[in-house]
Image (cartoon, rainbow, N blue to C red; front, side, top):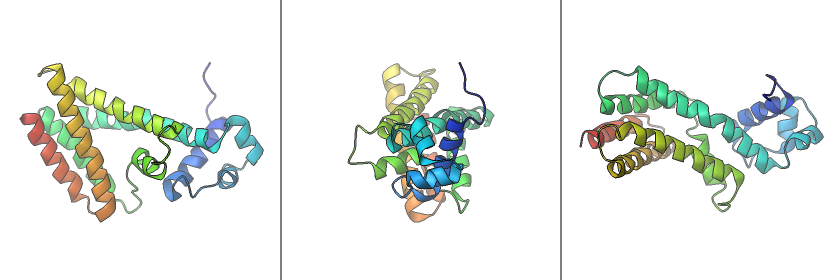
Length: 189
């Protein structure tokens, strides 16, 4: 049974997501989420056992849309696989040039929770990154052995996540484009 659009739970996750994105997960209280959603704190806890579960739910809502946008950018790009993967980095660089850009929510959350490896949000982030790697591996396995495709997918994921970090640190989106150049070279072998 699917949830109706704009359910109370969805409102909570949407409000939390806006606050988490803007301020970080540790800086945002459940009271702030309740105020942003126009609900009571009790209502939040009716839908989520804890703030930890709310953080994981927020990231879960980002999983499929993030993978889907990578897939769309890849599909819409012209050229060979290397060109198409590089296009993903080019789009990420374009997004990073927006002054409100805050990088990857999965990575930012993992940094905030680095001392809690079993946290539900860490597990959600790990699953998201694995889905991205698996998707890339599937692309690369079309013209190389599975083990080589897996290794290449991991290398590209490292370039993506490393570029997120360096761009966030330096506020220079050209690092994302440089990472895209490196990914294209790796793919072409």
